[in-house]
Amino acid sequence: MRASPIAPTVDFSAEGVQHGFLRLPYSRDDSAWGSVMIPVTVIKNGEGPTALLTGGNHGDEYEGPIALFDLARSLRAEEVTGRIIIVPAMNYPAFLAGTRTSPIDRGNMNRSFPGAPDGTVTQKIADYFQRTLLPLADVVLDFHSGGKTLDFLPFCAAHILPDKAQEAKAFDLVSAFGAPWSMKMLEIDAVGMYDTAAEEMGKVFITTELGGGGTATAKSAGIAKRGVANVLKAAGILRGAVGASGTTWLDMPDGSCFSFAEDGGLIEPLFDLGDPVAAGAVVARIYPVGRTGAAPLEVTAKMDGILVARHFPGLVKPGDCVSVLAVVVA
Ligand code: CA
Image 1 (cartoon, rainbow, N blue to C red):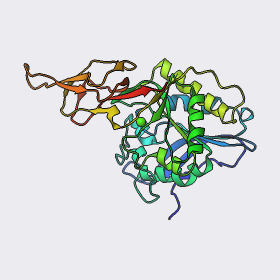
Image 2: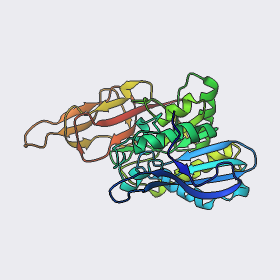
Image 3: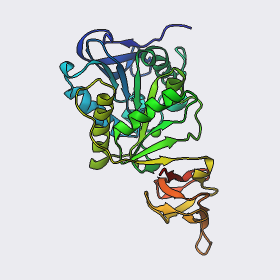
């Protein structure tokens, strides 16, 4: 396969702190020989494990970028044993536009793996992570939140994996992250995900869903900042004890945790995040908005659980995810 067109302005093997860019040539109307300049920080001090930390995989999710821009400016090399690679906004064009997908090619970074060195801008970034950055990593933390269209109970998560030793290491890091909630996560659509690419490479991979609605809160940003420090301590890269968490473990047992809208309209939530919901309960009503007098469509829960995610905007479209339930693991 051809080489990546991305040229880093940092040396991943050099000691110390480097702030630079992953420079991706992008020729366009307003810049004939222009580039996408994706910010990157590398902090290395001697031998030890490598952590690869990413936010902005989806461009409208903010806890990860907040925690990682903060970490990148504040960490000193002498605090680190090993190496930390920080990319606060992985899909940088999407992050700058405040959109989930890239305004350049509509690329959804988390459906673009393994990527392609001769593909679109999003595919080229994915390929660089697939073939250059992921192979350098031992531990991978990719921050997500709900973005503009979903809102989540704040949780850190890992996946059930065929390799049980790899799975156990990932859940140890989820526990260390110490979000209020910790999830054994089921994906709705795992093909093309960064998660899957990292896991298939044998990496210890964890992710988050820390809020949503296209913004962050003081609480959710704090969870992200404490969580990444805890993960780096648990991995032996930062000194210090992992802070006590008091997390509650959740499981998404099967596809019955998801409910989708079968028609569009005005959505009335009947439960809030964290509320217990019984199977058969109406989680939301969808009012037809073309005229008055019509009965709302009722969206029902297919299992007992607590509400961990919900549709965020006040209007819903057919096929939108309305709610996600999870069960508390005793
Ligand atoms: Ca996301």
